[in-house]
Image 1 (cartoon, rainbow, N blue to C red):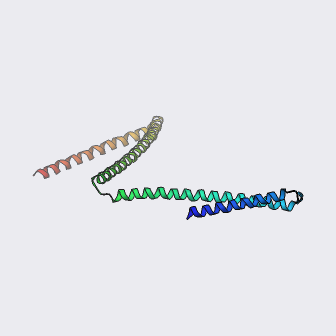
Image 2 (cartoon, helix red, strand yellow):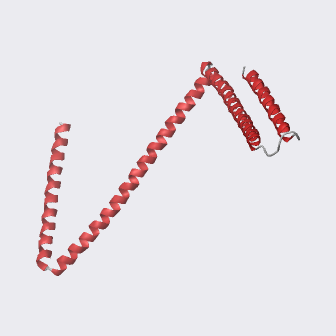
Image 3 (tube, rainbow, N blue to C red):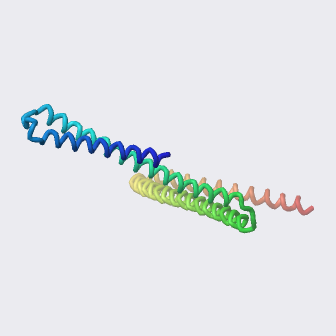
Length: 185
């Protein structure tokens, strides 16, 4: 149907071209005064209209052919996909298993990348905290050296901290021994 309509439109454009040529011959003939501006303007207007129609027709025809070609290609691709999906066999099952395995590997790779990025961020945080704590320690040592009373206070705090650590370690050790004795008897 499209080809028929295209041929018909091309014939009509050919007729219109012929009519425009006859008009041009008439305006160029010796019997018509060449100064008739209205006639020349009308002829030019008809030529412009013919050119617009021809251009629009060729553009529309090209678009239609491109769409039809695309549909033909997509139709064949859809047909291939349907035949692939409808075909059941060992090969399809094997391919499906390979695709699932590939997807699992990609997910594992993605999770590993996320874990590595989290570890790197944690390492950077720990490094910055270490730097901050070192600067605080150096400032505290500077203060302790300047003020002997502060230095003795810091030493007493450290002694109590060590004593508390030893007491806590002893309690945990005794509890562990009692737990082991209870478990084996």
